[in-house]
Length: 264
Image: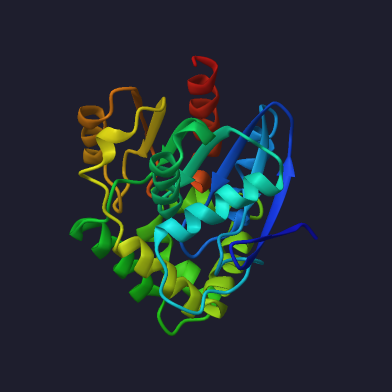
């Protein structure tokens, strides 16, 4: 199994596809399996690097308070391990925080920045949405937690139920989240302390901001924020999805990324 020893942690990763390199960074309480429905489409266009954040999936657990900077350094070290000097970097939710930190720390290492359902910080509205999800799942089995949260977490719960393998995947991710609850708690703490609103204008890279139209955690107002503060930005709104856009609209998400990169 492919692991990289980086920054005092073991990071599990997979690489698939050919073309320009693209690093995909998942969000809190997830793993590389969050990209399962995106993967068949994205790997047709890019040499795609999937990695579990430390404290997630098959990477080393988190045992102490950390910051987004640590996750960013992990990914820079992973790219060094893979001998990739420069690549496109895409991040969802907390992954978007990490991607932005990478863009601030070492912009020359990025070809472009792709932000998916994220923001420069977590505001009260977004925090309440995530707290509600956690409360819905509290004390339930993975199967019960997934079923109870469907109506709140997804724009079209019936579509989720009817997508082959989707419920099984969500149950797997929920079970993983319960087993790694302490590590994920530290990661959520890192997300809660992240705020680069005053630094966003420093990002000069070509940037794609993709936001789900019905996202409760990072609503479309953040698209307006990026439009105002970034000098080289393309903001795209994808309809019929809540925060889990990679599950609800994987094809639309990939096409948006492909179109953006092709215009660079």
